[in-house]
Image (cartoon, rainbow, N blue to C red; front, side, top):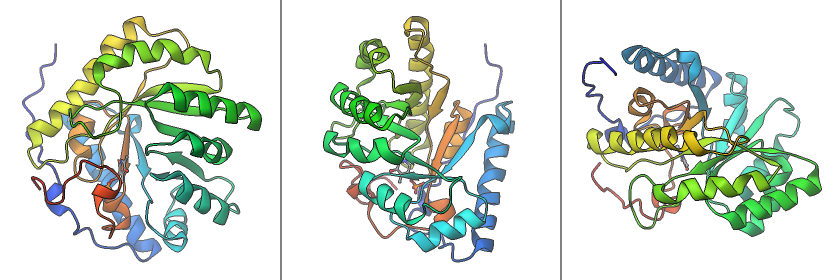
Length: 271
Ligand SMILES: *Cc1c(COP(=O)(O)O)cnc(C)c1O
């Protein structure tokens, strides 16, 4: 059993809307180094290797010029919430052939075609209809796709993701989709300044993964836990995150309110 001391790492949600904009390669290098240092410190608190955590920079709403600065600062992957925006940026930046795109937001079946064309990863799988649509389009493109199953760990009715109790049955269906390589689970925690409630979401995802591993089909890998964003990635890492999706702490604050991405994110709620 764990012998670690109790952790009381706070959220960074009070920073919300105040992350300074990154306007040069230097700014990006500075922000990325600061996030990497916090990742390393979080790992150290719980005896993890920092190399076991992948930092996924989230570039949604930011213009191509900004992504190019981030690329020059060393970023080789970007997370985008909206398939059309991601697709447009992929087209604009096709000259950067070593760049990878991760779609981390809800997908409608009529957009599966776009994702199948350019994404290397899709982190928000939560329905068989979307799995079917992706499979069909991926087969047509002759491509495969790494996927994460999104789980609703906050219990908020309007959040995307499967309820935890439905994930086991869902995973049993996925081996039928040979173009989808299941890598793990993804979640968005409660957007709350109350660190213990945020932490509970991450604990729920990790414990769910441990249970699911026992009966998951052989082709389903559950090694990855994608959890944690600018306001809470340190807590997520303490609870086992292998991918953290960080936007504002790298790119600067967004103008677009979070409610645009997550229907339940009420403005100003508990921040
Ligand atoms: C925007 C977004 C993030 C990153 O949020 P930040 O506050 O910018 O770090 C993480 N995950 C998902 C699904 C997102 O849409």
